[in-house]
Image (cartoon, rainbow, N blue to C red; front, top):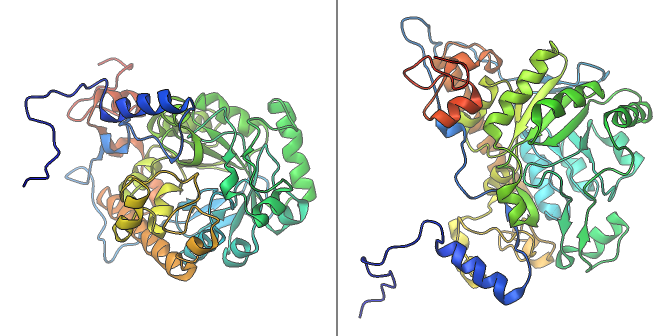
Length: 443
């Protein structure tokens, strides 16, 4: 007997009301609640796949991969900090909170980043001893919620990141559901356990760029002017946000595109707010060029959908000094791996589809506070997997840069790229492949 449950071939599915859309309408009608999930945008958006590199030919000379050096380091904080960060690779780990992630996951992120000479970042809820102890370079996030924030941890950090927005939910606050509020998480946040926590969407200390400048000045004074100060924005009005962040005194501007991940938020936010990472890179770089600071004292970090070395190299070519990864880092630790197929099936999902990071029952032990599940993640092994992944990203980016004749990743430029679609050409402002045409700039 056949168990094939595929619909008959003559039935035509709707492109507008596909199976997932129909399922969501039925769920909403049944429950009367909006959908919350983790991960990032799942619909197809213009991205780095829509660009290609123009490798060396007669007019350009490539570098020999096994004999000629291609630099990857980046220094962050030269504008004002007395102790800038010197990263060996231009790939950092994005802020993800303890609470959203297990303590073992935070430790693994620190171990993996430190093994390759780069930084990791705290997140909403404060700094854990595990991540400080295993992160050679740790960026401390200052968020609107102030959960877990204290001056002592601020001084222990190597840099400070003022978070204004996040690519998955610009204009929205964080969310941590009650089932993930363990006693330790509750204690760190000074809030009751088992109760849903919804973070503020705007900072209580300032209402605009002039106030932000004062806040950054305060942060520098209480940390002895040692630490670089980042300002992170979700990609929306990116050009002006970058200008204002620099005016307020940022050493580093972090722009998180629409494809950026989250531990939990409304799906309507994830899929319908913000702009893709592709145009956001270009807009932020244009703002820094306008100020005469691009590739100078103020650095640009871009995040949102970075998956491989090609994404890294393309982001750098469009103007980023470094990139940051979140979702990809969790996958490298072991999220969504096929060995857990039976566990995922019990939750009604499958490897490659699991996005219920908000529920706390992650079989990989990463997005959970359940002690039994958390023990499934060995932080040493997870850190080694992350370090291997970061090495591969770096080698891939170097391979592409050498093919373009560049002795450092930062020598990549928009001229090394061509677009495969009109949309990508317009957003990245690079020519459509085979033409000199950039939409909006004539022919």
